[in-house]
Amino acid sequence: MEERVDLDLEDFSSEPFLETFLKEIQNEDAVFLVGIFVALALVILTIVFFGNFWGSSKVRNAVLLLGLCDSGKTLLFTRLLLGKFVRTQTSITESSATYKSKSERGNSWTLIDVPGHESLRTQIVEKYKDVARAIVFVVDSSIFQKDVRDVAEFLYSILTDSILAKNAPTLVVACNKQDITMAKSAKLIQQQLEKELNTLRLTRSAALSSQDGAVGGSVYLGKKGKDFEFSQLANRVEFIECKARGSKTEDGDADIDALEKCLAKL
Ligand SMILES: Nc1nc2c(ncn2[C@@H]2O[C@H](COP(=O)(O)OP(=O)(O)OP(=O)(O)O)[C@@H](O)[C@H]2O)c(=O)[nH]1
Ligand SMILES: [Mg+2]
Image 1: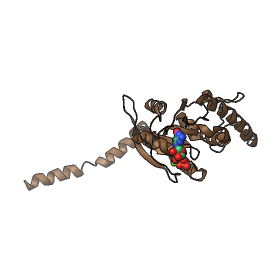
Image 2: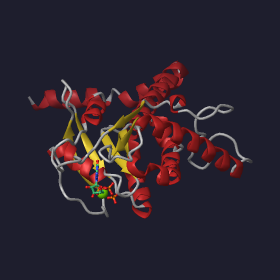
Image 3: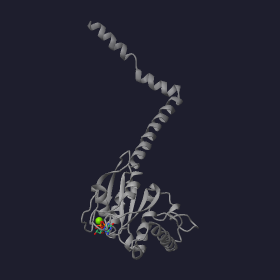
Image 4: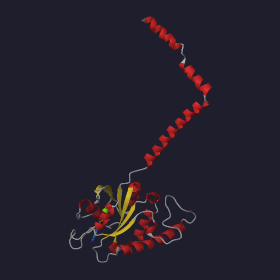
């Protein structure tokens, strides 16, 4: 029994596998070596490609409520979630909650109420912009004439942001406070915003005239050589009218149907 084991070991040592293998790859083929390198390179490239792909593609499931202070974002937020009136105060931080859309598929989105104050909103928009599936841009239609410049400036910063321009989330301009007699219609608000954005584009591009196309993270608004229209954007754009608060009672004839329909289409 012991003898057999000795024999086997001798046999093994008389077979220098490593040497044979090295000889084979030295003598026989450079092709074999090249094959190994190519296979390794392919494996590395695949890992890098999928790593980047998964790393950069985020699920865009956020619906951002944006707009100037007092336009009615927080009331719309609670009405969309709870279906009733609540007393609100100026928001100082963002609120988020899961919103189930009223579509047959019943998709759920993360609804985010962004404070309107300029010093707060910029940072919060930065935080969520790459996961935005839609932007609900809320306008106080009752004082639109007074606010038009500020509304247009905020909208301009959103529409020329390079990441938002690339992802092109659906844009719903919610012309709120339609219960107030002086409220401007969605059509008029759209026309005036197009005019104001056109003017802003002229003044802003004049200031940056030495540069062309994408400038420091911002893109050109609309089509060059043509007056600005929302239809020139890659985003799906809808202008709707709503009233987050009723005119007689706070809940009574409040109406956010058009907004809910837009969210059901996302
Ligand atoms: N009449 C009327 N009032 C509304 C309507 N929507 C909101 N409001 C009122 O407008 C005021 C401001 O509403 P908010 O929802 O707090 O406004 P906001 O956009 O969240 O404001 P910030 O948090 O400061 O950015 C509140 O008194 C609301 O009750 C509306 O459709 N009609
Ligand atoms: Mg608020």
